[in-house]
View (spheres, rainbow, N blue to C red):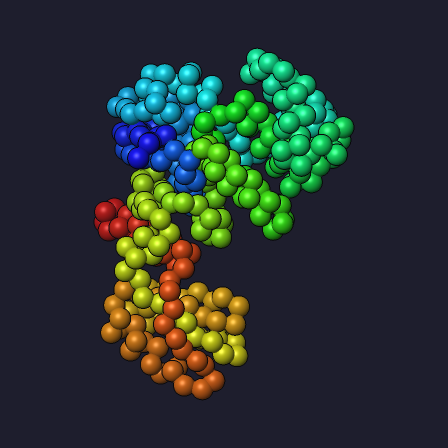
Length: 310
C-alpha cells in the first residue's frame, strides 16, 4: 500500500477554541476520500493544514506525498491542487485569461498549450472567451477545477466543490474526479451530500474537531450497529411524531413515501413499531443508509458532550 497522506497529531487552535483535535489520517495514493462532518467541525481547517496554507500546532508529524509534514510544507504545496468552497478566480477576466494567469503563477512552461489542454479536458473550450462572472455555478466549478489541476498535482483537495450546482453538473464533476483518480491522483473532498460520499473509495467523518469514524461506506454502516426498518404506505411520514419518542427508537426519518426507523436494540425497536405493523403500512427490514449512520454518530457525540459537560 502506497500512502499519499500519512499524518498524525494534527491539531489547530484559534485563540481559546481548539478546532482540530489530534487527527490522524492515512490515505492511499489514487484513492478518493470523502471528508464529512457538520459545519464548523474542522474540515476546511484540516484541508488547509494538509496543503500548507495553515501551519498546524506543534506535534504534527508524518508524510504527505513522501515529503516530511509539516517541515516541507512549501514543497507539498507545489504538488497539491486546492479548490476552495468560495469561487476565488477573477470574474472580470475570461476563462482563458484566468487559466493563463494561474499557469504563470505556477511558472509553468508551454502556457498557451497547457491552457488549451485544460479547456479541452474540462469541456470549456467553447466558452474560453466568456467572462468568469457570467458563468453559472456549474461552469464556474469546472473552471475552478481546471485551475486547481493545471500544474498536474499529485494531491487534489476539494472543499465542498459542488455546493449550489445542479445535479447534472455534480455528476459531470464526479466523473472527472474519478478520471483523475484513475490516473493516480489522490483526492480528498469535503461534502455534505450523501450520494457523493457513496462515490468515494472511503470516508473520514469529523465532528467538533475529532475524527470519529473512518472506513468505506459499507464498513461504517456495519460498525454503526444500526438496525433499520422501513415503512411504506400512504403518508407513512405521519408516523414520525408517534415513533420518535418510543423506547428503542434512536431516530426516524421520512424518505418520500417511506419512513426509516432506526435503533441499536432490535428487541426494543421491533416492540416500538409493532402497533403500526398492519394495513395500510408495509414494513421491511432495510439496510441503514450513510445518512442514517452519520445522523446517529452526530447524536451520539452530542449526547456524549452533554454528559461530559455535566
